[in-house]
Length: 465
Ligand SMILES: Nc1ncnc2c1ncn2[C@@H]1O[C@H](COP(=O)(O)OP(=O)(O)OP(=O)(O)O)[C@@H](O)[C@H]1O
Ligand SMILES: [Mg+2]
Image (cartoon, rainbow, N blue to C red):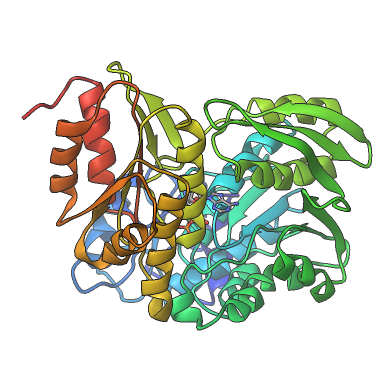
């Protein structure tokens, strides 16, 4: 963060200083985990039923924190006292970025691919100047200000992921840290249980372009009609990316290599250049075009852009992470999270990498689909069968419609089984995997990771119980 005196912090958050020196200055990071506190930090204490941050206030001061931002007094601890520490942290983030006129804020939203694309943009902007775009999602009312507060006087680019579980969420995040460039990737069905409809999701995602200043830039996916239509919701300039023939930044002649890595001709108003990605999956065409549109806006010449795109790598874990085990099995670890759209791209990547090889999909439950839950799962099962995947392991009873969807497809040459849990899936894989197989692991977070980790551990020869 930039240096701020406690008096400035108190003004920014509308707080009251207690036992604190108004001239003392926060020069370090803003942390809500006392273990991360260092000299000059500001520690934010959140109240909680299980863990109350205020219990760690004294520890934070001992570790070097200048003061604690919290909602109740702790004897002997210098404090900035507020009613709501989370809202205060948001206001502090706003005050901090407002003091950085040389900073360009880039916001990314969409139903799928936010973290992936944020990481891609961050890798490109790093070539242009100091960038804050930490790995991981950090896309909510906590992660967002936490990330923004990492920007300092030397930071030129701040790349933020904007998540939404309802209408108004993105608008709020944009009030905390207003974007100058807004990227909207897609309108899918993730969290549709909470939103109610895809139109409501479009309404919510479009808040990112509504937040733009007139001299800002909206980067919109021309291949997604709901995203394309967002052009009418902003006064800012619009750059459309995609494979649509009239897109401003587009990909032509897309091909995939034997590892599912796309190559294409990048076409921009400045000209054409060949791009060969090191990333896996057809969906990376759109994600990289979105990132290219941002870097182009920030002044990266076309030739450098094409080279930079080819050098993009993975930053955040468990997203389309493809690795080969010594035994000749290829694993696609896409276990971070899942919704119908991201499941579909992952299954397609499996089919593409698996051409001429035996393919295995280990798929778990997709959370938060509400009334679309049963159909959403069944559709993925159908896709698995239609793409001719050889073996499907459906993990957990809630994911059963995937199994039913696949087995309902006539003439499918593959085989599906419904397993009780991840441990059962690992057992089946141990028994069945042969050199040359390609395995995809995907589902909604947490326990799905166990399967990917078991496959990884076996690759390292660590665990054979
Ligand atoms: N443009 C895309 N369209 C559809 N699916 C995508 C796209 N980009 C990535 N994915 C898939 O979505 C998965 C999750 O990607 P990522 O973590 O970037 O999404 P996210 O939007 O940040 O998710 P979350 O809402 O959980 O933060 C990827 O591993 C991949 O399978
Ligand atoms: Mg994310």
